Length: 119
Image (tube, rainbow, N blue to C red):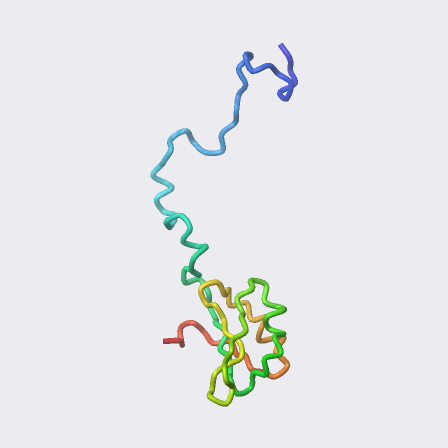
């Protein structure tokens, strides 16, 4: 019998350590929130504290916010600034609210607003 667990033959009865009890659903797991599969990849799930708001008149469409966004949530639009439409938009389903876009905007066209203040 070999003492080396890596090279031990399978017929010697390998012991596979378990990180959780063998019970598939202990009562202590009920205290954790549960979401359906894929939920957190399709919406922000309400955990964002602030959201970016774009001032259409101040936005020049330079796309610095787009280049620095870590999640790629900012997209160029074919909007008319004279009509009050911003040159970029934020996909709020994916935005974390980190505020990097507001920090890199040289024209102060992006402000971060608390989620509690948004309709």
